[in-house]
Amino acid sequence: VLDPLEEIKTCKVFGEPHIITFDGRGYDFQGKCTYVLAMDCVNYSWFIYGQFMPCGEGVTCLEKVTLHMGSQSISLDRGWIVSVDGVKYRLIKKQRQTISGVDVEYTGLSVTVDAPNGVSMVYDGFWGIQITVPTKGATCGLCGNNNGDASDDFNRGRYGSTGGDSGEHAESWGIGAGCTVVEPARSQCSQEEQRRHAETCDDMLTSSVFSKCMDDLGVTFYRESCIMDLCYADVPRYEGRTECTLANTFAQHCERIGVKINKNFLDELQCGSRRGLQEDIYNAGCPLVGDPPFYK
Image (tube, rainbow, N blue to C red; front, side, top):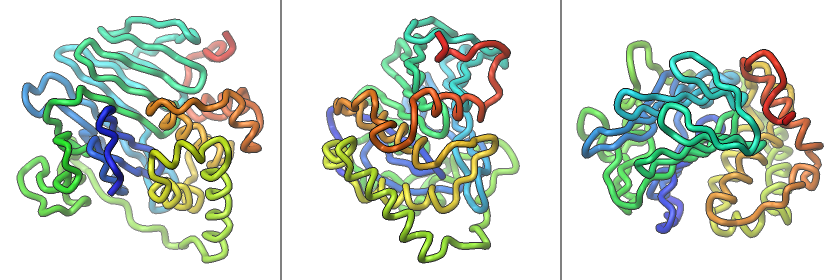
């Protein structure tokens, strides 16, 4: 269990999916389906769905996020693609746009969405979403109930009691038919591979880029998640290094709690240029024809 940061009620979903609830409970869930990540569990005025799809043997990753508010909706897809009812919108870097009733801005490595009801999202363009909600207000879904108590996040699923089981709780929030939990990888990560990946993750998380931030976030869950992702992630069409897109995800988690990350953090972590990662993430999606938004 991670310590909840009471001043910011943010749920995080990233990697193969690793989930940290609004109240700070961390867990993994290898579902293949569209799931309710979070929703207003009092007035049912908004819903956030996340689509988990295979991204390697025995693992799934977040591929698409959709926010529904009344009759309006907006979707975020891999490659920083923003769409409404299948129609893609061309984003302009650092220029806020109002799309489907919410403010949207592309910053270069993330897309932020701010809704008038106080719900906001930060999407890393690849496999990570941060959902922030008003401190008070009951929620439902994979992100938990937002009541300030991490211990009861898995007690109640969509159809009633789930007895504190994270898998049963998460499965209950699947939308539609055909939801399943993928079979574990047949070829497990060897001890030598795990040792190598652990060294890579430790170097990144204890670096000057992230050491201060990880003291606040809780390094253990991030370290375990990092090792797992390096072992098994194989995202379709992505040609970059897994540790580098993880670095982008972690940087955004740090920024969300107010820890400033150096603009050149990718270079410091030997991940190459910012433009290189932008192109790798953009090309992993199905973007509009024409120049990508980071060219502006």
